[in-house]
Length: 287
Image (tube, rainbow, N blue to C red; front, side, top):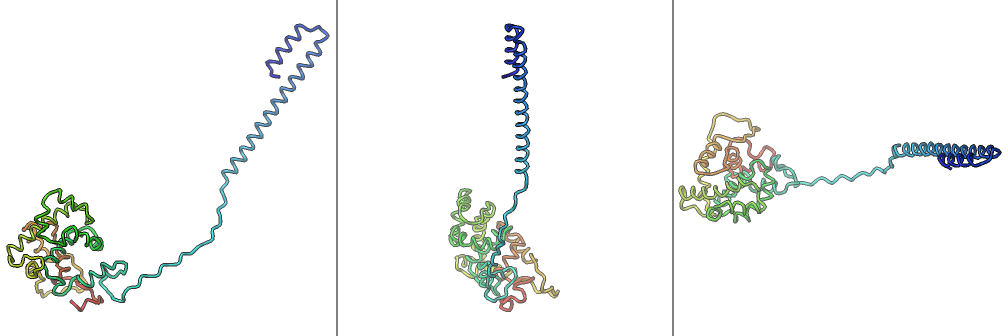
């Protein structure tokens, strides 16, 4: 019985009951009050128990969980890549890059040049320009994509076919280096390459002619010098590469800075100051 119900019942009984019944009424009221207090005490006790239970639960959840013991597993190391026993220039000595090794062994810096044809020398010119800011390995992996996109480096066809921004965009959809300025420069260079051959070597303008651009490069060999250079010194440009860069720029070529031209002359096999194949490289004495 609630406190409010108890008071109402007491009032009714008190007003209507005879005097002799007062004791009974008082007894009933006292009993009801005790029941109410008992109920409240029970609720309070339950509240305390719940709180304690909740506190225990919270404490249990906050306690750090025991980590499972996981059996230690050791991965077997991968076997090292086995090379072919040849010692190469350091930039081509990693067996993980077979394209780089093949390029070093078969093409790069051959004494008197690996290939004298106009097509090959134009290909090197475009690839060296594309390499600016990238690794040579990246360019080598895209070399076949370049050959396909540039019609096997047919500079005649490039000069007459690729003339507009739309042609530029079409080339950028292929797997070549996606740099708009480099692609645009390649189209400009194809036209300039044709004009140079027509002006200086009119009977050597064919893709497979060997006395066109190769003869042009002969004027950029290193000059004889009495000063001795440290054989371990590595250069990135020379007086000859400076001169070649300036001459090509005057003819309208793009991406032909001195550093790019130094690498180009070395790759083509035009003798330059500085390290060629390093001492210890299996091709060092073959230059």
